[in-house]
Image 1 (cartoon, rainbow, N blue to C red):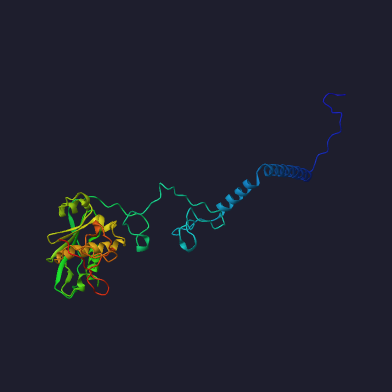
Image 2 (tube, one colour):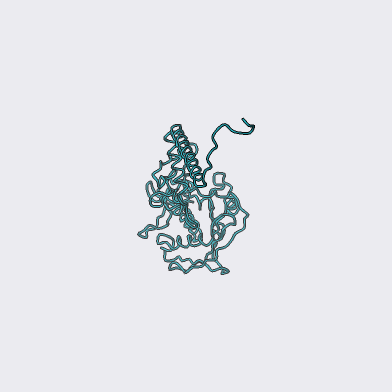
Length: 319
């Protein structure tokens, strides 16, 4: 056989159309084989992932698809029905499980201090800022003024608050004004009258709210058990102890606002010429001129010189 000659039959030449058909068949076979492999892999993955994991994956995908809060709108996750805060976090909108509320151990739970206002008096449930024990000894006067109160000659007065005490002088002035004008106060006696003086106007007496250390200095307190605790009148100045103004007194069972009235009525009573009185009898109202911070001696705590009917609540004179 001559070199270079084949023993097989020569292959017929394919037309372009036949070539295209063969290529399409080849690609179809590859597609079918690839799909079958993908199905097998998916089945294997489903078999090894627990049901809980699959649910978590699905929830994660759903959460990613949910839109978040828009600009200017707060999330509602921390609010319960009615807009109140939920302890320990509220249930989410998809019915998620509520987190347990934190448990307070006895050594971290807060207990109200004796004489502190209860929530029923309108005081904030959050703890108040600590009362500073001392201050710079400089005072800022109120810029408020008021109308005459009572039928007697109006004694002009002004309030000054020690700087750094945290007490607003204008708010304190309105509180004292309300106490002096109360129908159970000194204006119940037609001989008395008061007026909150305008800035720069001469006054008959001044009310100063001072830190305990400054109060002790102005009042010349030397009795050990009264150091840092008491109020006084020094000359024509009523000195109100910031601690007592903010916390009340352990001896006084009423709200702190009532004890503030006792401070003002007692010390202004001295300005009007009244001396100390004591308990008139067990179960009776303590006179406003009684030093109730030293103990009630069987009387009931009371902040006002007169009762609602206009009767003066007196007691035996203290020599």
